[in-house]
Length: 269
Image 1 (cartoon, rainbow, N blue to C red):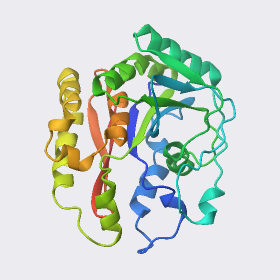
Image 2: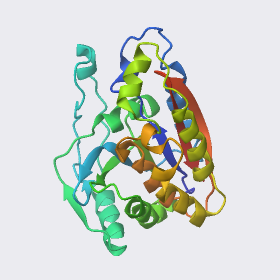
Image 3: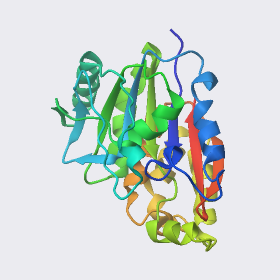
Image 4: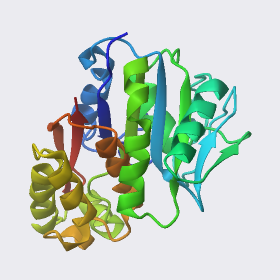
């Protein structure tokens, strides 16, 4: 079984890929990127572990539901977006292994036997894995959003990559909602989002993994950091997959300008 990379993907805005927009191609590039994601891998993963911006718990918590439903945790969207399906199976055995590895690294970890997939999981993966045939386990963020702890969680999970497990961080590299709402009405997000995107690309792709971790841990001091991420829950999934990168160098694999802002995706390995 070939070693899988780790990925950080922007998951868009709400159920953005399944509704009408003006102009109609607003999310076309982003959809195309997700549609090609599985073909870009060394082989089809045997399972997915997804860290979504939309699940925070006091301690790291692993979804242990064999048949997760969908959590329509967005509001005010068209009726068809509440009838979406993505019936990927869970994987309780993989959930157990995730928990064991986190505990062995000194990170407390719990289970949730009932939780379904939130939209940070099913919205992008309904595009990327349309047949919903790959088992998927969701891992929460830790509610303190501490960068070092999330890098450490990723380091603990790195060996899963050699067992055919694809680790995906699902968030957004820019998530200032006030700016994004202005962008919906054609007003610019300004230059700070671009400044942070440039800094983030340099940090995430640094060839020295120790320096990469140091820079990502200090993201708050980056140019435009708090402008791009007034609250960092959409950024911290990147820390988990960067931690799981080991010595593999990061690469920026996608950039899109949408709703007046820039969003980027990264791959390690």
